Image (cartoon, rainbow, N blue to C red; front, side, top):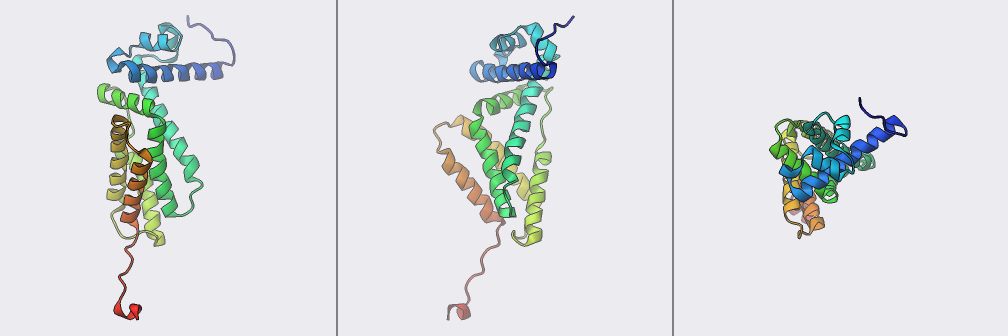
Length: 207
């Protein structure tokens, strides 16, 4: 029989699940993926393997929660900031900046998620095409308003996602980087690519 925990069941259960997810991130980050057994993770969380199994049916289910939580936290981090952006240019800048900034603020969770995806065939992740869909719509809205130039919104959205996903590996592998500089350069690169090219001055306009 499963033991009952004191306090509000939903709040206590949620807190314990969060503790186990955080412990899994720490174990994978510090000791590596092979060392991250359910027993080791439970010990890191200050509980037992039996309690861990109360909250997660298997190690794979806990791993799935680690990955899903990262994507959900990232989406929430972005959404809050995107709501304040008004124009397509502001939204695109915010989209890229917040994605990259979230990586720099959560290196352990990002790294643990990378290890899980690389090693576990049971974990489901957000596909690049799915992640790019809202970005494609953002680009299309900028084109419709005339703020962005003509380009293939799908290809550009996938390109932006590829750079962001690659940055997650690049940033984590090089802690000495000037991250602010890299983020500003990536933002500037894509903003230049979507904006209309200013018309060259003509002889008449120079008179």
